[in-house]
Image (cartoon, rainbow, N blue to C red):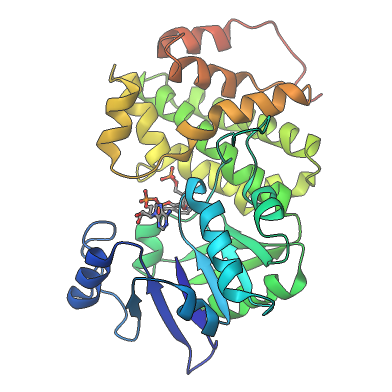
Length: 324
Ligand SMILES: NC(=O)c1ccc[n+]([C@@H]2O[C@H](COP(=O)([O-])OP(=O)(O)OC[C@H]3O[C@@H](n4cnc5c(N)ncnc54)[C@H](O)[C@@H]3O)[C@@H](O)[C@H]2O)c1
Ligand SMILES: O=P(O)(O)OC[C@H](O)CO
């Protein structure tokens, strides 16, 4: 997680890490060897560890760069430290939280925030963005989504620059559904390419996957055009085709016959699609939304179908109208 202060020439940015040893190593070597090897950190970037309360208490903007599983705890920490100060907070995670004790379904990050930290001024930064490319300063375009105009504007002001275009969007539901479901569809694309089903098949998967994510998003209250944007089509194309995607790599490894545990362990990084695929299917079913590709991914993750059987089952369905 990181906290940024004062946009403009005198902007100070501090990277906070929970692991003190790793923070010390990053600070002294000026490189995050585990996650972003070979990329020097900007000289002015501060690195901190320990209790983030003091850091947050001085921040003008906080970015929470943790997996969905850690978001609830980070939001609680941020709320405690910020108190009533109206400091914009944005998370970078994409997925659904695992079902919490006593709950029926897993939640999107903004739903977690509404439960755990309703007083925060919050939003999400999403869209097609492999961290390695962003860290190298290669061009990217992202979306800052929040119901709060102040949060959208704070994110654009702090992050928009020569290598990063930040588009504002008030449809946080659509942006988060796009970011979560593309992870599941990227696993499907990895399976498809690992099975060498061809580029026609991959194009079909992306297009029909986009139809699935749009149906779920509309049922959850999103706007259709969001799915034609950066967090919909944009992130889906990136993760379904780009080999830097951890989710896509899970699919490729499963298609090779590797066990799921083994595939996940070998990544060394979180692949959110593995953790949210069941929730995607469960929430879709509860809303009467048909998501055959996501269901096929769940069947493979659960070991109920082998990858080739899942592909055959998808192709073997009855004909359907292209839009419904
Ligand atoms: N890596 C990317 O290219 C990328 C791009 C956009 C969005 N995302 C999203 O960002 C989220 C994180 O992805 P990642 O690539 O950083 O994952 P990662 O597995 O590479 O790293 C996760 C980091 O979060 C830290 N962490 C885990 N639990 C924590 C906690 N409770 N408190 C503080 N820190 C904690 C870990 O120590 C690690 O440093 C995911 O939801 C992912 O979908 C990733
Ligand atoms: O590596 P993945 O599959 O988690 O994808 C990373 C980012 O979400 C791409 O935008």
